[in-house]
Every structure is written in C-alpha cells, then in structure tokens.
Image (cartoon, rainbow, N blue to C red; front, top):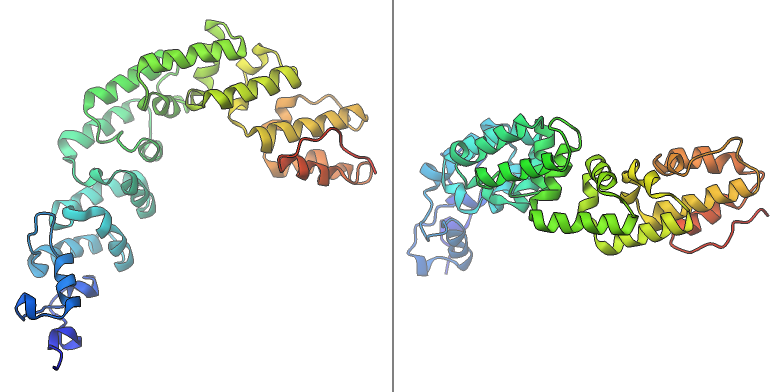
Length: 334
C-alpha cells in the first residue's frame, strides 16, 4: 500500500510561521485508524491535557509567533514546550514570558526555574505573582536576587501573599535588615521551615558552638545559610574548629561564613598547611586561620604553597593529598 501524502513532505503545511516546529506542520486527513502509526502518535502529542485537539493554525501558530517576537529561537521554543505542557494552548503564556524574562535575566535562567516550578506559567500574574514580586522589591531585592531566590525556593513567587509576608517578617526578626545582601539568604532559610523548627535550630547552634543568645543572633544575621546546614555537618565543624584548631566561640561568632566551607576540601587541608609553615618558621608574619580559609583556591596556592617550592618541595603534593580526604599527620620537607 502506498503511503499517504501526509506521511511525506507533501503533507507539510506551508501557511504556518517558520518557527512552528516541524512535527506540528503535518496535516493528516485520513480517518484516525487509517493513518500510519507515527501520524497517530503525532496527533496525540498535539492534544491538550483534556484531550482537546490543538488547532495548529489558530492555537499554536499565534503562540509560537509571540515567542519569536520575544526573541526566542526555534530550539528554545522546543525546550519550553515540554515544561509549558497544557499552557502552550493559551496565548497568555506569551505575556507571562514577557514579564518573567527581564526578572530572570535570560531564557536559560527562566528555563531552570520552570524545571523546578512550571506553575509559574499557570498562576495569574496580576493576582498572585506581581504582588509577591512587589514585596520582594520592597525588601531591597533586585531582579537578580529575586531570580536566585525563586530558583532556590521554587514556590516563592507563587505562594500566597500572606506566606511571603510571614517569611519576610521572620527574616527581619532574625536581625537581618531589609536591603542587606544577606536578606535573600535569610528568606531562603525560613522558606521551608516553621518558626518552631528555626527556634530548635538556633538552640542547637547555641549548644554546639557554646554561644549565648546574643552571639547566635550575631552569627545567624551575618550568615543565615547556617540555618540550612544539617546537625551532622555543624557538629563536624564544631569538633574540628574548636577542638583541633582551637578557635574560641567568639571568633566563630564574628566569622560564621567559615561554617559553610567544606571540611575535607578546605578547612582541614589549609589548617595543615598553616600549621606546617608555622612550625617550620616559613611564615614571614603571623597569619590568622580565617585569612587563609576565605581566599580562593588560586590565591591560597599562590600565597602559601608556591613560595615554598624550594624550602618544602613536597608541600603542594601533600596539600593535594589532604584535599583528597586523606588525614595527614605531618607534611614533608624532603
């Protein structure tokens, strides 16, 4: 039996915009059961969630044309369609993208957010999303901060307004002022936990690092992400920093970012290097532990490893071994 013209290139529609994906341009006219299997599958892909057959010329084509008007390429449109799902049938999706693209800064960032929460395209912009964005902007968050917060907390823009206000209030009670670079992180810390849960985490921090109420307030206001760390992770850093390194609770209070660094890949290896250099008189002046920890890997190597190539030729190798997770008892000279 000869194939129907719709199965070949003769079945392609030429009256649709060039941005319409190839699979939507075919136009089978045989009864459903008489169509080739691949045509029946293609027809099913054109159906919406309620089984309504999409009219390619009247439904899909205007939407795709709108996407193209926003500067989206055919490849980007094809990547968006699976995430949009049934919303691809609604022309309002174009206005949604027109609103979101400036906030997220790029199509890639928006696509990343949609992968976590594709309901961004479902909720009403005027009644749900825009009021939430307005509150975040009142808190001093710019579009870049809002985008990062929305990716970290997918429901932030689609939550009800009272929930967003409650998160803002909790962040302020934590001691983080609006407009602070840490305010976004404070909101992230409260987004998934109740006030009771956060209160329990604060008590655990006080117990683990021997902090007073005032000290835990200072530490958390300077580094809200510590509230998202697990008990095991915090306990491990407490054991190392306070028992092995010998840091005082007050020292950690004013440098809480140190709790977010990797124990195996940063805190412990760099401590070994500093200890080795001090014990062998290779430091020109006293260096604080935090000053060696907060710098980037490149700066640390250039400042502490490279100048010792002749005096301690195995230092770089021993440091790399320590970064690999092996506990070192002492670095070698030769």
